Image 1: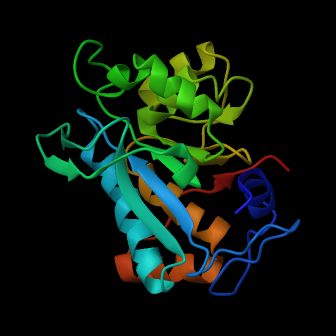
Image 2: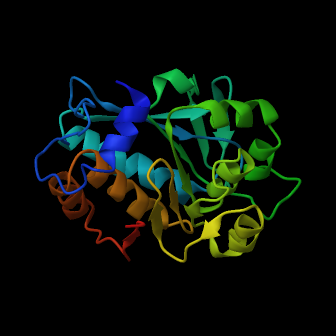
Amino acid sequence: MERRTFLRASALSVGAAAGVGTMSEGASAVSAANPLRVRVLMFDGVEEQDFIAPVEVLGLAGRMSGGALTTTMVTTGRPATVTCTYGTKVQVAEGWSPQEADVLVVPGGGYTAKDGPGVNQVIADRGFLRRLAASEALPVGICTGVMVLSAAGLTKGRDATTHAGAKADLAAQGATVINARVVDDGDLVTGAGITSGLDVALWLVERFVGAELAQRVETVLEYERRGTVWRRA
């Protein structure tokens, strides 16, 4: 799959009513034979709701679409057992390989604990930030995970959102902060605080696979999306 062409074209494919997305500009369609490969970043101090919402939504969408999406949790480096904000332990079997991902979801957690586990430790990992900045995978930030994208230089001059408690910092680092639950700026997608991960993930399903599947996933989860997806015309 040609990554940059795929991401550009996917922005034009929103609203496809079929069970799989129809891509434009010569990009390949998402299907079981050519799935969208989503990676969800895991790290000590990650907020449980931030990561489990996209794992649940995208995992269900993958199952209901016959494998048009695959979702894998990854660390910044080697496989590890991650301890989340509230003590949940998650065994993560893979490290992130940029060439094996179409989308990288970065959840938040621990932003106010400057010296503790959480996003600040990820931000301090300059090697990871360099790989993130150079990756062709679509960066998707949820809650204060957006501040990791900002540290990698991905939000400067871009429309973005984050948790209310971090919006001032995001603006100070050069982003145009939008007070929306989900902001889609083409090759950058960001979500607001914590529970917005549900809405971000459902938007990814709609954008890449189609509105019909997104609605079916909502029905199974008994969840109705909140707010609107902010996109510049």
